[in-house]
Image 1 (tube, helix red, strand yellow):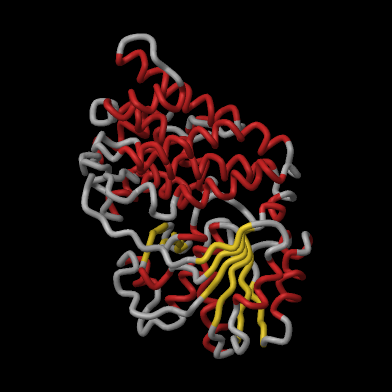
Image 2 (cartoon, one colour):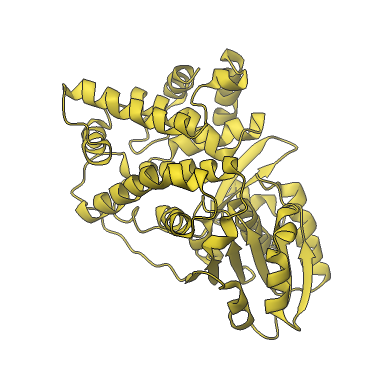
Length: 385
């Protein structure tokens, strides 16, 4: 196990009817901007609950944050914050809204061109507005970490950023807020959490037994609850397990002291930026192909993954690895999420476009061994055709 430091300051307020606790979580003298996505937050009554909990505080609202939050939209929120001298942000939504809120929190106090925050991965963030979240879509884990992703539509750039100053002060997780989610978004959330876990787990053995067992438990939970999570939207117990699993998948715990990959995400980001495919769906496109191409580098963990997550114990090593990858692909496809680029009418031209973007963004040495260069990225993308 590698040396590590683990610190996560986000307070989690989990359970039914917890939105009302905003009355004590948000400072009484705060000048608040509520940020959200589309009309669903209003239609479901969540925004009304939030407004009621905030009471007599000075509150403004900013809606319209996209599923892949854009720099152009977020800069309008930055202007609203600055013009209204607002000093506390409250994200109401899923990972995209929370990611966008993190960017606004940093950009509102940034002395310079805010896009530089994304270009430098957040390394230049020196201060940020405090913020909290009310989670309505379990998927990204953004409610309990310090990272985010933002897209500049004008240039098709989708870049990630992080900073110790961008942890939410608190996150309210009420599983009942997920009951009205479309099945597509629930399926996306399951895949997103699954791949977040594999990116920190499916690398190479390092005698990190605790992290391995935590990760395997999260993966097994997702596989176990997936059918019920999609089929029974008002099953509180299932949605509670999904919400907490997705949070734990990317709050830093299972990634502490172990090598991490993230190549699936970096390649997937380019597919989203170029073709507007849902983030989770790009992960389902890339991961099975990447595991096949990288099977030698990941051999030990792939065999462990097959045995412990999928109970694959028979056959040669290569046969067991084939079976583990096939089960992963089948899990995604069983959720109605394609694992081939052809399902999106994309072919070789998409491979070339993604490679061009990877090169432009310096993504030429990805993976836990930094050995996924452009040639290997080509093999992965072509394996996903």
